[in-house]
Image 1 (cartoon, rainbow, N blue to C red):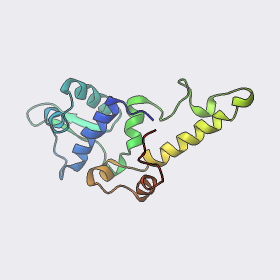
Image 2 (spheres, helix red, strand yellow; image 1 turned 60 degrees about the vertical axis):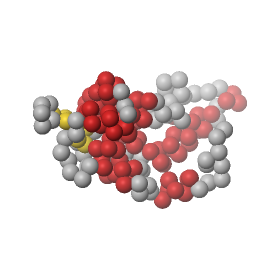
Image 3 (cartoon, helix red, strand yellow; image 1 turned 135 degrees about the vertical axis):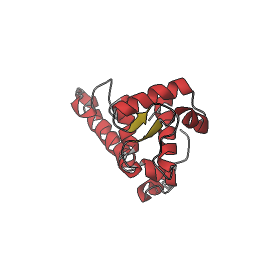
Length: 152
């Protein structure tokens, strides 16, 4: 799985918002500075997240950004879908809709199973989990699998 800079920056900024003890607005410049994110890029990302209902914003001297929903309700998978669409696709098509011929036919099931495993993690880890450092047990279990940390 490849994580784009857009998704990486979004999740880092959202985690900063999730970690705030209150829901007061945070300036985009502050978010950008905390995570070393280019401000122009972050503004575009936050605009998309606002359109998706993940963040809210207000302009002005008392303005800024905040989470539109409680951090425990926003899953990592929600953020990825808001910015890039479905978690898995094959040449732009959802895995369950692809058709392969002959001996390649079982690839459809491979892609659907892959999506299911990705969902198992990304749809069950919230911004609150990340911000608190208290990741769910299934994430720790996956990290403990043989070879989990080995590059390939």
